[in-house]
Image (cartoon, rainbow, N blue to C red; front, side, top):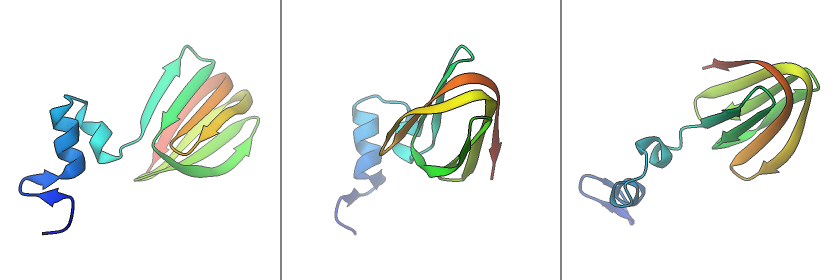
Length: 95
């Protein structure tokens, strides 16, 4: 058995369960939080693939998230979070 793993799941899964957190948090799945139509927070990303004021493409674990709009700006980039501001018109996913 690998270090940090136990019967019935890994350490991460056990911590998520013990802290009563949402299951997707432990899976590394991306999470989108849209605040109105002017701000998007994308968590668990894999990096910015393409950017223009009309389109932002961000890599996620199982594909890409594409944000389209007008006057898009990347207001913050952290290791696991990207914040986009502007007039967001559409969000799409590709696998």
